[in-house]
Length: 376
Image (cartoon, rainbow, N blue to C red):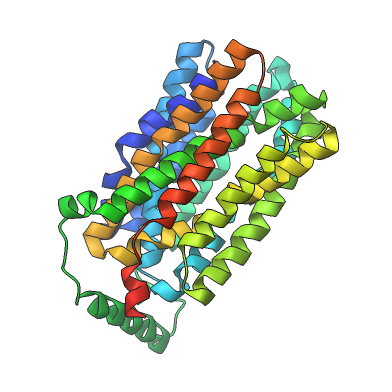
């Protein structure tokens, strides 16, 4: 049930990725992101009231649909503010929220799971409390987030003009290449390659993200609170890796190896498990390497679509890549759960994770040279 509930989120998530990205490009990032946060927060809180597996599956599906436009929308939004040479750093700072959420959320979730206020189990309180900040931040976003640099009141007029001129210069440089329609962009070979690469990346990565607390508890016997604290360590490594590799990717103007190296590190880390005597210390080393590899690639990867494409074509490509690849977020955890149940061991699932990360690395490495690399 856990694997299905974890994975079914991505069926709803799949449906609205491209519309969400296009709405940011053609309508308003402020309105879309604020609405997404408010609806997602409300649905998360309501998840605390489910009583049957089918209610849980329905809640997870709706959560996925509500969240669908948020991530691709933010990636498109950042391309409205940062030129290509600075984009990976900006994406790294935004996406650092992922490991930070695991670092802070793990121990906090472990503590909440241990409570029983008003006779209500801790897991229900976890959902009830988790949704409230999203609703509040959605309301704040509605009033403070500017759609474009030209609307930013906290920038001086010359600063707004400078940002706008740099972005316009980038668009003019890319105008030397053939302009693509949305359908042409979705059939563009580099977009297909990136989609396949991210599919395998997500298939392996989401197994780790969803199953790590369960794996730690079963393999060590730790309490929920202890699992929360120790489970934060891999994501500290991921946070550091994300910020460092995002900075270095912009510095070197290189994206593909900054994607592949973390993926191969995660594969190598998990492969160690098969060849060394098992211990709690080894488990934490393995999980730390995977934690690094499973998030540090993100800034370099998401700087790539805007290097190939511009405007609506780039927005549609971001949505298409993420929504199609997100199927891996369903497939990976589901396969891992089924294999673990059938074999009574995690090892076959671990082998699947290693294969996914290696395939993802190879696919992105063969992706053609970025247009923006050629321009610069």
